[in-house]
Image (tube, rainbow, N blue to C red):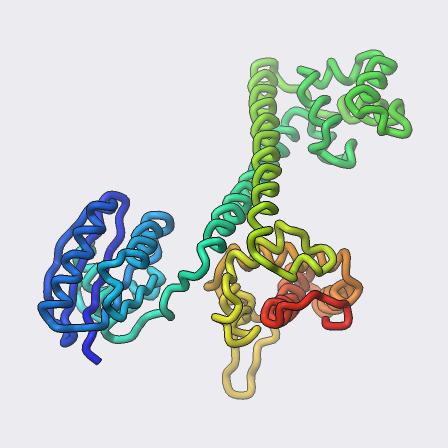
Length: 409
């Protein structure tokens, strides 16, 4: 069946387009704005090409470019002018396109050439499966769960930055673990309320004890002992020049505000995720330890489970498969996870698996078994294997649309 091939190189301002005839010859090459009007113009030219060549099938391809290509994909899917044709839309991995481009000699690097390469990759069949565009409720949920993913990543980075500066001001605090939670309300109040370690180290013990009781809301069983530990750590910390000390105080105060803002962001996203998840029937929350957030993160990335023929295909999509290192009779004992895969799905599967280790006896047993098998990278390896085991359970629960019972592990 003859097909028209349309390669699109997506940019933030404009999209370079190359329309290729079934035999590989050029039909047209042009640029349109990455906007509604530009996309309408693109569709008109595609329809004109289809009619002039008397074709019924069209393959449209573009590289994965983050947010810049998403509205275009939605438009191409929904626009009624393309409805009469057998239309398939493919989003190609940039690495895949680059490797295909290497088969040519001395091609320059520019947008029209990249659009040509995408079109030719479609013609040669060097493409992924047709892009999945299912129920838009999954996309809505994905927006929220991915935003949460980045908020959590930012919070982790901010915490590490905070700890670095905390060591500069209170070196002994981080070494001796004065507080069980370094980022608890009482700990943050201590960091913010005292300008120097000397002020903290030599203040009246009863006043510091009262401060601990007040900020800790009387939750400490022995606040005086905590106060003594704080003063001991303060006395053992380095003393800084005043100018340096003042700048560190400013950084710590800003970092604390950032952490509180990120915590509020995550709480708001968790609430929105739980509300959006109610619109999508799911059985994953029937698993102990898998709440709305983890369940939503997994479901949003999977979408319709029926697009995966097996749990192995789902695991590969998540990047939870290992490279094979084998030659003749030699087989490597240590292998690495593949670098490809959906990093968001992998993250939520691993987070959920770690929660299962704490809540489900079978997963706890399995994690412990895998942890003890090696003496390097124990946690990382055991968690990845546990997440892979969890994939089988996720696949079966979603495929059969049934609730979880422990003996199904």
